[in-house]
Image 1 (cartoon, rainbow, N blue to C red):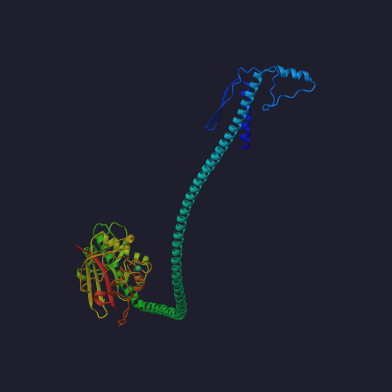
Image 2: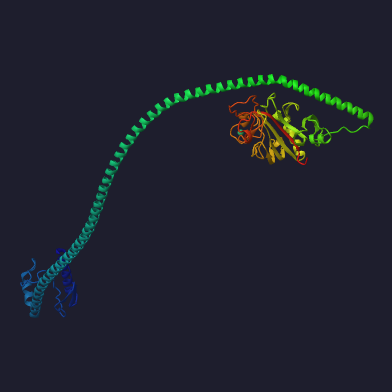
Length: 504
Ligand SMILES: [Ca+2]
């Protein structure tokens, strides 16, 4: 403010000096909203004196002092020469200057008052503006603070709600955990109780295993002993059978020798007759017979051993021909009458045949197959028990397959007196021996029932079982069997299986 005032005064002094130095009468000063116009006194036509000097002693009323050195005489002459208009002019000028000076003082005062009041006004308005700005800022700050406070309150409320929910959930979890712990505790107790029970049962099981294991071992050893005993007894029985067979073999041998002698005699007689015929008749081709029916047709009426040639082969086979039974012409496949021949044999023996046609024998599966497949044959089975009772079973059609089909059985048209039902197994049954199991039993029928036969499982018949010499009440499973005539135990005195052409 002081600087502003100083500047104002300096400017005024400058204006004053210019006003004095120049001829201008007016000057305008703009200060803020106010403008000031200065009208200076008129000094034109005022020709200063040559010796007029402007001094600071403008308001002085006294005349200028006399310079030293100027003589008193000179002064008195000047005073005498001074015109009166100059004095009046000077006085006018002095009074104008005095007025101007006063006016300037008033102006200065006025300006000072105006400036002061303006400054105060400015100061007040500035203060007012600043206060208003401060108030507005304060209001803004308050409103912002209130807004922030409200937001903070909302956030706090949300946090409190969230915290409450979390606390509730925590409480629920805590309760749930407690329940689970109780449940787990109960389950643990139950498991412990079951474990105790299990260990007790295991101990009991071990004790029982130990006890029954000993008993089982004892039973197994007893079973083994019994098996050994059975085997020993079977061997003894076989030995006895062998001895029996050998004892009966002697008589059989005699009979066979007799039969051979008879055969030889017959052959000699035949040769003699042939020699006679040769001497009397032209030579003929040697006769061959495909079976005993043809032998019979050739005129031979006596039962006995003959040689036949299988159809379409060069194989000669010795067979026994039955020329008596039901018209004769039967080719015998199997014959038993005394147990002199062992029928408990393997596959190859049954394949090739064994025994002699004049005694007990099996003709052989290959020969039976070739014979019965060459034309249609009927099968006759003749049986006789120990009491001399005879019976037969008859089949209109009979043949067996080759070895590739295990000599499967084919029979049709059953009739006869040895049971109302056929004791032969049905068509399709395969042949089994002790070393070739083709039956339909999980066991091995040929080993249990002995011999070779068309076992089923194991079937109602077996004419190749063991020949027991004497009648007995003991049921022998491995004996000769024709179930639907004599039940499981035949005790046969004789069996014969023989074939003849169906159209005989
Ligand atoms: Ca079997």
